[in-house]
Amino acid sequence: MKDKARIAVLVSGGGTNLQALIDAQKAGLIPHGEIVTVISNKEGAFALERAKKAGIEAVTILKSDCGSTEEFEDVIGDSLEFRKIDLIVLAGFLAVLSENFVKRFQNRIINIHPSLIPSFCGDGMYGLKVHNAALARGVKVTGATVHYVNEITDGGEIILQKAVDVLPGDTPATLQKRVMEEAEWKLLPQATEIVCQKIIKETSADEYL
Ligand code: GRF
Picture 1 (cartoon, protein in one colour):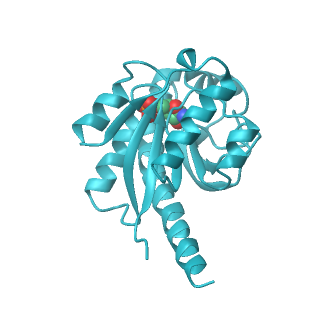
Picture 2: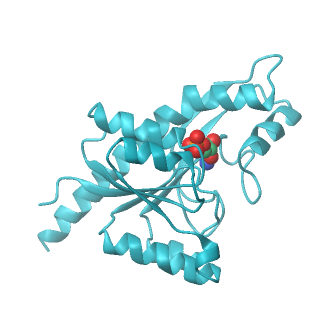
Picture 3: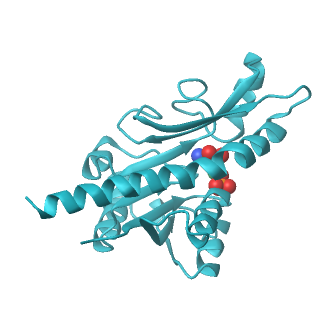
């Protein structure tokens, strides 16, 4: 029986959420999963350094090397299948995945979004834009959401959410920092463990069929 789900983390940038996952794994907080590879679609993303430092395989797959979006997704998908990945965690992965890709890994992809979905999410809503929109609307509470990825941007089933206060004088940058520290870095490891447990349970049930 398999005791750990094999996790791939897909990144594009600094990788603070990846770091939270690595730290949680080291602290024994993801007992049902193991990060086996980190894939970046941006050359030189600092997240790759974080992976290497933790002794995790770090791979770069560039769309510009693949030709079309379809080929790019095929290369990523084949690399994931080759590594027998059970769970794909999008941690600041700045590429929208097509319906085809999502179907290939149905219920096996999760994403972290820096707001309380369904607020401030959807196409084009990423990074500081999300916090900008929250401040412009004047909400007093925002937060982060971990959800399954389906064919609708930020539209998949919600796994965990955590609220964070918006404080007077906040800028998009100060709000982003608070949402990361108080919500994202805690929520992503917790949700990852929840989904890994579920995958392990399903795979062991399948073995008895
Ligand atoms: C985070 O705000 C995450 O919610 C969003 O992209 C950002 C990634 O930051 N999806 P990092 O690369 O993990 O530091």
